[in-house]
Length: 238
Image 1: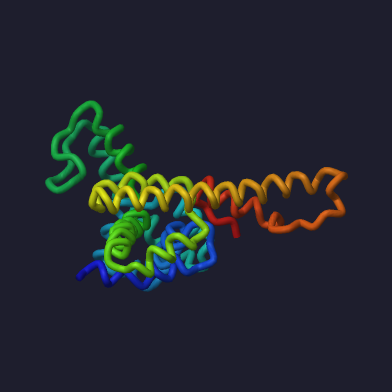
Image 2: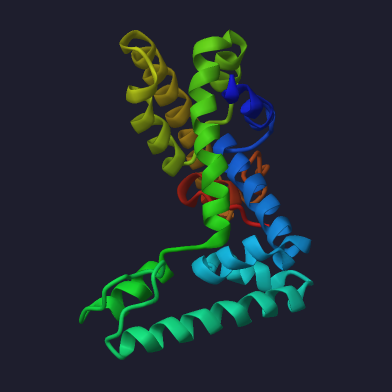
């Protein structure tokens, strides 16, 4: 089955020592997408056409700028801005874009619509999402087919709130009624038990700044803030 192609990264993520295995998978995809974008691929016509069309979101363009390949980024920005200037000039004069453009008919709102669409698109986000959605499908595939995966799921450190919500919402369409009920019971326990664990670590981190506890051990609270940020914002802090 096609899903089996994705079982290795999903299993690896659930075996990793992390606060959210889905964040772990997403981060790996992001790292791979950044490396791909800043590697030789940016010189390929098909990829350049896509970066010209989609551009980059503010989050990913900051990461690209931190990469050592400044020439590659400059080349992508140059052809992307060439395309943007040309098409917005056409729309600003109330003319339709050439066939195959973003809009086939000009209207009073096409400039705003064009910019709105451009702001919501990103070459890297799209590349990540294409595989990430298959990873989510694979979680439910493994849940149905591999009992050892259920044990990994139970023994994980839970999920960030955002990805807990994705699993919660997707489950109804991916599992039978009985399996869905079992999944939600386990998902809720894993999520809330581990959120409370991290919440407790954050609380103890705060207590350590109280003179009454200054001589007490830090326990597991020294890295409570970055772990809490993963749980609440699905973001890794380096």
